[in-house]
Length: 406
Image (cartoon, rainbow, N blue to C red; front, top):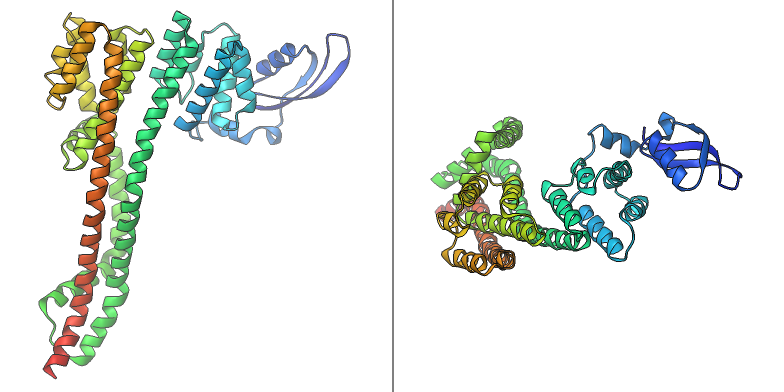
């Protein structure tokens, strides 16, 4: 059980000591005390009340693993310590002691324990949730070539690029999303609470009701009557759809649809290609063979269509063909970029050229996001303004007609 283990023991000079130490298991607690020069004479497991609740939730699978931000910070700090000449075990112990995120802290503790028992760093990392196959494969390549610090620096750069794209997408979509939901809320409030007041006024006055007013009143009546059904139905539909696109067939169809979707399809394709070639370039620059690099890329690609296409590329390369030939058969792959890859392959600088390709796609993705944001904002404002304006005109039109007739 994870928590604080109370102990009694003897130091190297025979002095009695006692205290408490935080550890993931009894074995880890004893090992940590032994490293501190303490020979344990008595140690007690933590009581349930003394246990680390966060660690228990993580071990039971009830807490989320750490995110990209925490992993990037850990990798950057580990690279700095190794570059400074600090041994790997000592570096991990230092980072484990200062880590605030309980999920990452537990993972570091487990890695230290596994490495201390003779396991390689990449094998220990591969057993922890939150570390991708790409991460462990690069660490393996770094360990084998004796350039772990360099590989960790490449990992940091890779994750920072990923985080930058994700942040830009979220930032670009925040304002339009707020405007959209705020506008829909105002429209709903008008239809459900304001329109009925005008309807009562129209009934009392006995005015003739134009067609546009009848249409708005019909929608208002529908929302008042069926909202109680529509809300749970929408929530149920959302969960059913979410579960469907998690299935193999659903994911394939959804990925194909999003790649062909107007406005968004171009961003999805270029963003996916940017991540793909950034990953491939990082693997190759770390000394991982091309076939193994393609395998890892295929495993890390979230888009099933791109994964299928890259599998075709891997098969062709395995049969002795150049990577350029199968890439040229992918319809959404730009010919100019294909020429860049061809040059990189012929000059033996494929990894460097792939980095440039990734930079191109990332820049184009950013430009496409900016264009999309510029288009979406006025479209949302015009549509919502038109809806709200139509509702107001529909309600006031009978009054104006009555006043004109009088």
